[in-house]
Length: 239
Image (cartoon, rainbow, N blue to C red; front, top):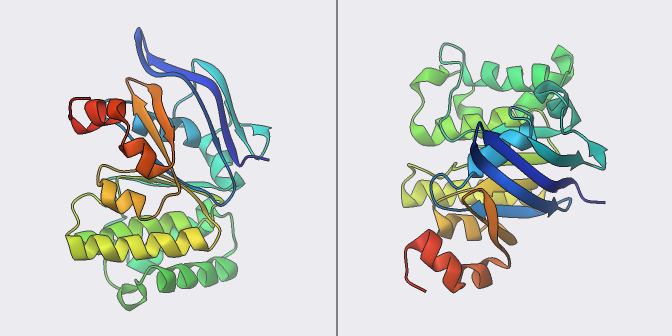
């Protein structure tokens, strides 16, 4: 059974179609990359998965259950979590308190089990040494780690990543890639939107390309990136 399935999903702002009849299947444990030019509908795709946008038509299934109109909170409870492009921690709280919020509210756990989950996630993401630091004072790499840690604290089956490598130096990017590989190898299914393609292909096993809200290409990353149509639309290279 697929973990996530889109069946002919469309979404529009009035007369402007942003997601156009998209069908997509993601297997348990898979790492799927999503690319496309600005305005292609990539972030809207994640909004549709999390429930912050409801399709105009089509069906979204999670573990075989129709979640097309299920609330974002319920989807979180079912095992869907998202890390956003711009980290927005609770700036006046400590790093530990931020992660504890994810473990408690997102994971619907009592304080004791939530504390153990939060500590495990801090260790996993390399933030244990900053557990008592105020989140608002973190540098970018650690803010991104914290954004990811809050999502992981819900112990998701499906982790959605929105341009998490943006703004990082080459060395910081390599650190983040290693962390995402560890998460992938631990069995968490990943859908990752990213413009930094070399980072993306280091983690994913399949690439999905959107253009003007519709599927342009899908398959093995190396083959998709060599497609003349993809290179023209996404990389700006004439076919």
